[in-house]
Length: 125
Image (cartoon, rainbow, N blue to C red):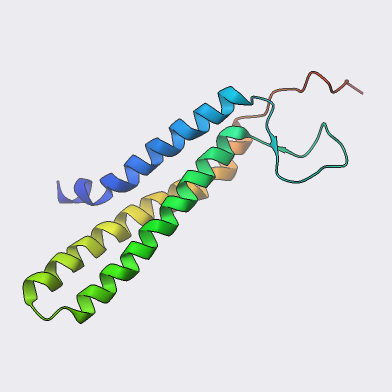
């Protein structure tokens, strides 16, 4: 049960990333450009994968920043109970960060498995 409580914040961020990706995919099924392409029919990134990566990337950065703060607090804490609480928080943050990192590394697989819809303006050559 402790293991589930440790990874629960990471799983919540994965669910948020899935919701954000689904929302972006419904808003723009033909994908988005991350740069100005030479060919408007190529170079699109899947909207789901973009939303997924943005939410997980920012969540991972926030969790790692909080883990750094928690580590600093645990090193500077004088009483044993404060050290124990901050170390427990650090373990939770690192376990959740691991879950989000694994999910973030799945982004190329998600992009490959969810092809973008064809743009109606592009003609078949």
